[in-house]
Amino acid sequence: MPSGIERRREIRRLRTRRKKVAKLLARAKSGSMEKGEVARKLRALTPGADVIIEREGLNA
View 1 (cartoon, helix red, strand yellow):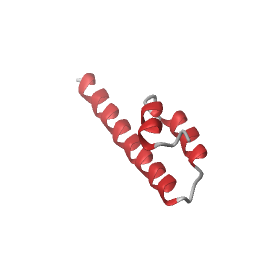
View 2 (view 1 turned 90 degrees about the vertical axis):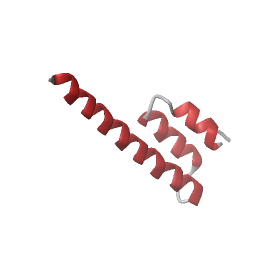
View 3 (view 1 turned 60 degrees about the vertical axis):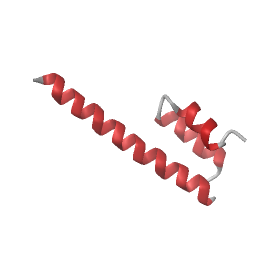
View 4 (view 1 turned 30 degrees about the vertical axis):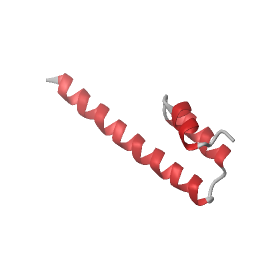
């Protein structure tokens, strides 16, 4: 049943990515990291980065 195993891997990757994105956004909001640096890391982290950057106003 390899398809189920691959799906579990996919879900684990997604959950980890969500946690990392949340941590980066929290650092941007608290001011402990520059917004440009957060945007750069988000682009490297996830394919949906542009949507997140626009939503959170990090493109300023």
